[in-house]
Length: 362
Image 1 (tube, rainbow, N blue to C red):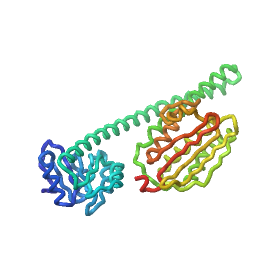
Image 2: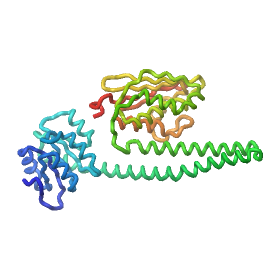
Image 3: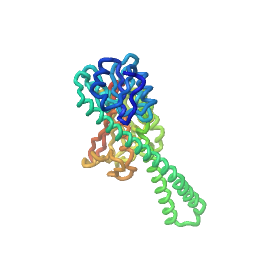
Image 4: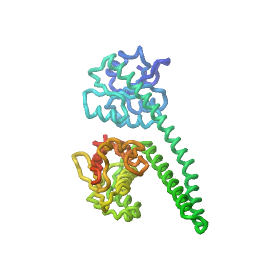
């Protein structure tokens, strides 16, 4: 078998990254009449093929002389248009299988149990799923570009409208009556609300648009920044904040800030008649951090608890309907989950579970 060239043709191209000669021969015997097969006994050569050839599917061994399969999988997935990948290993390992699938592989096979039918089925299914994923990624990027364009085109005239109305009211303060002044203030309020909606739409569309690069994040510093940013609103609501001991967690700092910002401002926005109290705490639960933000505000009807995280949900008065939807996107991007418990008139408790270790994230 030639590791550098393969028979040309219109058949689908299969890249076999496998250092064991016997295993390569088995795959060739089963599939060479159906696929054009490129052999790469080393990970570096396999990556070169991915970057220079049009590959439909990669059969990737988990253990290679110069690389671990999962590490190579991550490099393949970093390519602009990664091919489908089926991970192969000498023995069944459920943890490895889960990590491979989370890492971008479309399927996972144990070498000792492969047959022509199982290989054919896995490869065909992987190629189809990868093609669908690629189309989805393209559509998502097109939507993000559209959202950025719309946001840019809307912000300027809305800001200009708000500024002009304020200027008109100030310059002609003595000439206009109370009704006209109220109308101008209503226009300003609506323009600012629409600007906030545009900003929220942008934030929602951008979450998950880039790879998640984990870093250590001091949760206490994030919360302090959120409170400082909204100090005027906190003071206006006469809110009492009770912040417990908060740990250093793994995450993407900007995304974690967005999450905590949404949860805290949500509590402020939906304060009840009683003096507002907001509690923020975090505790370890096994391999997870459980972050809790509770308030004594208006609360949420039980019938709405399943829908408040949906985009543009406006079950409660006010708000853009995107803050909690964005929060859910951030949490899910980190491999966690978020939920709410609430009693109407007595406040709400938002709970977030985030992986505490790199292994848990995997």
